[in-house]
Amino acid sequence: MIQALKEAVLGKGYADSTLRKEVYQKVAHQVLSGDATPITPTTLNTYLEKLSKQAYKIADRDIDQLKEAGFSEDEIFELTVVGATAAGITRLEKGLQALQNCQ
Amino acid sequence: MRLQVLKNGYRLLQKLQLFFIKSMMGYVPGPVAVSTYRRNFFGKHYNPWLEQGLRKAKHWSVGEIELFGAFVSKQNQCQFCTRDHHTMAQMSLGIDKADAVMQDFEQAPIEEKIKTVLRFLQRLTVSPHEISEADIRPMKSQGLSDEAIEEVIHVCAIFCVINRLADAFDFELSVDTHKTARFLLKNGYAVTSLKG
Image 1 (cartoon, rainbow over the protein chains, first blue to last red):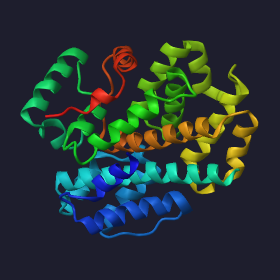
Image 2: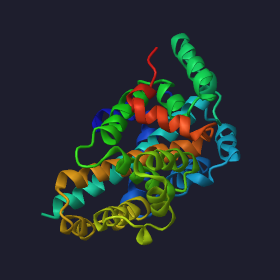
Image 3: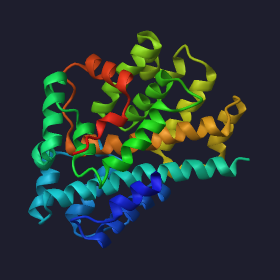
Image 4: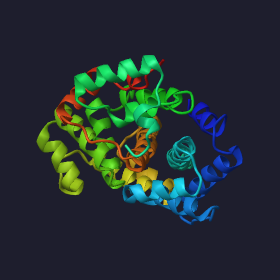
């Protein structure tokens, strides 16, 4: 179920598949280490930083800036879903790993 | 909703179902929109996880799971999810108990076992990189099984996904949170990704 979700959001889509993998890895890295690794373009990087750590601060202008940078609505939908999925699944993996280590 | 595709990018059969939902609820709940739009990309796979984690847990009641979900959503400062899941926790566990947890769980009149879980959820939500076996041990000391702890971890992960989507896409707040809560308590989450 979880693997199917991960494969779906990284599989067929409108946004470049390499970029989607980078987005997933960036958010996963942030969850695992607390550190941010930059991604290009800058507009997308700024958006993902917010999505990962303070999604409640995302505003209309963040979406507008992504559109101005050339992303279509479908690409924004996908990149957001990929980032959010990474935030959830990586927490799941981190928590289950800690549980496994506590035997 | 910030993306137009989440307002009108649906297939005919989905549009009819969304029209019916809007007539009944007064709005289209964001999770339904995001799980229905291009459902093979996300909703088809996310919603079974949602249903499994929030409605088929073996070690926790629906009220406790909803309370955990509301609590994680509050840690993420997601107004949309906090509101609806807090209401479901109120309806299942009682207003006083749910409110006390959401205000200050350390002072709330609840079992120590639940407080231990809430401390863990707070850390996994806000400081996941710091999580280690030391965070698991207090829950085990309270007698929680590995399976019960696993269920709690899934709830946290599920909400860390939808909280971000709610805030990024700007989900519309429910018109009547009690109506939404009653619907979800009765029907669960499997029905919220519409085929078509």
